Length: 294
Image (cartoon, rainbow, N blue to C red; front, top):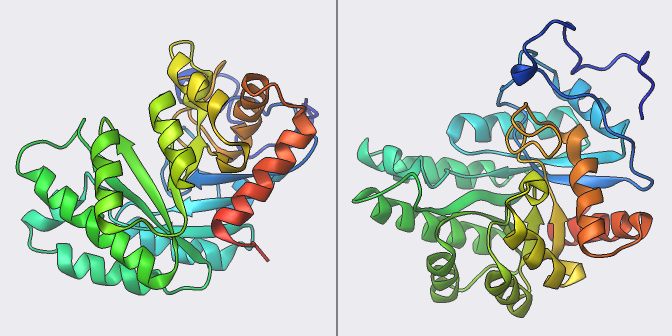
């Protein structure tokens, strides 16, 4: 464990509301890994932590870098500023599938997509995402806007040679269908993989990456563990989706990149892997998916 006397940017007052306070730092990993999906601009806890302090806290437990992900114009602009501010970050920019209908209803989707493409031209922006389909929060007419936005993001990723980061909620079959209809980019990442063995086999067959988050550690996530068990080792990534999806045993509290070790250890156990070798594989896969951080 980290020395309790070492200052930690996520440590608030001892009497803070535990539901809104960040958990203590986990035991460091033996080999550094990369958090390939985080939202440093989103605040869920009692504390506001700077980009540099957040990445320092992650590095202290063996999380050496991260991909900062945009979900709308504001957060995508933040992403570009963040990757310029800290060399440990690469970026992804997009209009989230649940935000696309809102832009469309205001007549602003075309302009938003044009700006996303402009932001994606930054050399440290390596992915278009998160984009995709969400049948849990969006319904009715909004789905047509969501589908059109997804197709446009695929086109941007292909023309710019960038990785595609997919948000998939209750939409596995439709996302696979759109990817086949449009022709998937060379590198596709299913962010916060939420499928079962069938979707894992589809990803294996198509060479798509599966990124596992803290949800893998939840007691009711047997489907995710079964999917990970059959995923090709070279297609596995890890993420936090912080400040969301905090892994067990701190589920329900705010998440951050320094919490990755909990998920990595669970993944190594599911795949019956030696931890150091598994960490090395995760880092190699992440660099393959996004390119180098130097």
